[in-house]
Image 1 (cartoon, rainbow, N blue to C red):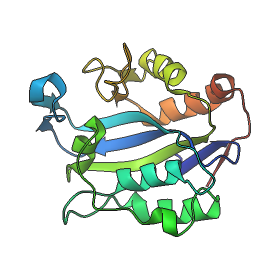
Image 2: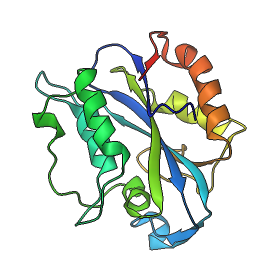
Image 3: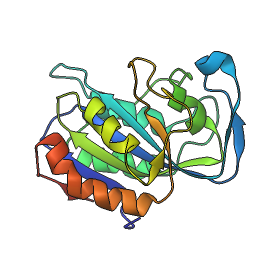
Image 4: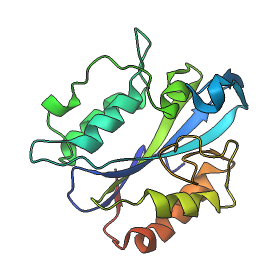
Length: 197
């Protein structure tokens, strides 16, 4: 990667869409809650990508910050993802959150991605944050599923609320994917106000 932990795009919205770049240090067999009736899937060591969104509304609401802080935490007494501290600083600096929004309750495993992020072998190493109120997941999902640097290893994983997309993918080359994504993102979201920190 570029050495940067975050890429920001879009306007000044407190809601939006995001991509988590995840490293898995060794192979694991993992059940994603009730997905595929709780069957354990083999995940090889390597890189993964998760597409999500937080589009809640309200003047005092910080849905994007709350969702991302939640992703960087783990349930129980497990150590949070190392990127979490830098994420808090970036959220405050970019006015996506206030101090109150960064306090989350005890995490319970709920979404498919929670099960992967709970593993001590997993680590979030980069987050693309798109601050835009429009629903971008369908377009981004189509883009990611057809990218030569990604592959679908379980159809509809991470996206059971959609009919035919997948939001958790394997990624063969995160650097190439991020480079291409940053070039194509303005066309996907119709906004070229991108910056990194």
